[in-house]
Length: 118
Image (cartoon, rainbow, N blue to C red; front, side, top):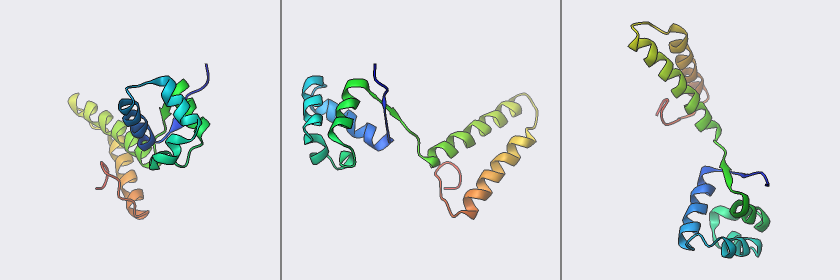
């Protein structure tokens, strides 16, 4: 089986809307993708080639997180370790320092990331 196509969250959401719109008619979706119909008519898919969209309907897709989403996931993982430590009556100084570093770096870079400094 072919490897899943890597897509953004936005593309994945559009693919799911299209699937629902066409009652998940796989044959029709693959044909529509291969002929370029979907890439011409859906703004979110315009940067893809027809065969890439067809491959999504054949093999599926995997959502690739944006760098911001990766930072938030890492930040939240540290946060959960800190909360676990607190539940055991302990302090996780290394985790607290790591969270502070992430907050400082995003501030220095002028990045506003929901869940960290927004």
